[in-house]
Every structure is written in structure tokens, then in C-alpha cells.
Image (cartoon, rainbow, N blue to C red; front, side, top):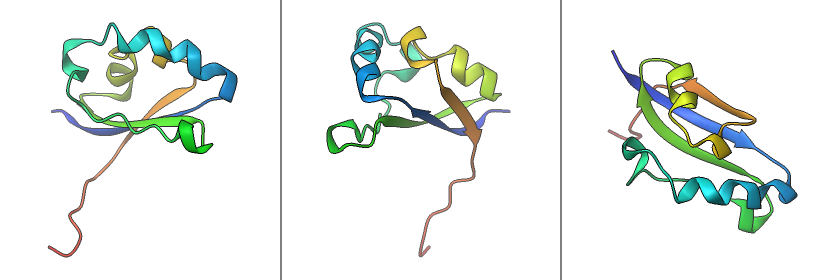
Length: 82
């Protein structure tokens, strides 16, 4: 049964450019997903929420450029105030 994973990557400023080719060859399951990128504000990282059966499946489903230094952490999503 698939569940949500938080995709977490931290990288150095000089590694940002190496990620760019991955955006042009996204697998179908990532198209339309939110990609949270604070790099322009000095925090060199990215985050996504992806559903899968395992953290290994999440990482393998990323473009190769996104995989180094990336973890997939299972999460529970709660709606606040509801």
C-alpha cells in the first residue's frame, strides 16, 4: 500500500546547476508535483511529497540528477484545525 514520503535533499550552492537537466526528463509520476526549492533564498535544498510503497521506490523514481544526497522519509499528513 502506497503512502506519502517527504523527499529531502540538501546540497552545496555549486551543485544546484547539476540538478537542472533532471527537470527536462521528469518521469510521468512527477509531472505536476510541487517541488519546493529554497535555493534562491540561500538554503540549498529541495523537498517534495511523493506517494510510493517504499523509500527506495521514491529515490529510484527520481531523475538521476536528483538522487545524490536525497532521502525519502515516510510521513503522516495532518490537516491543522480540522
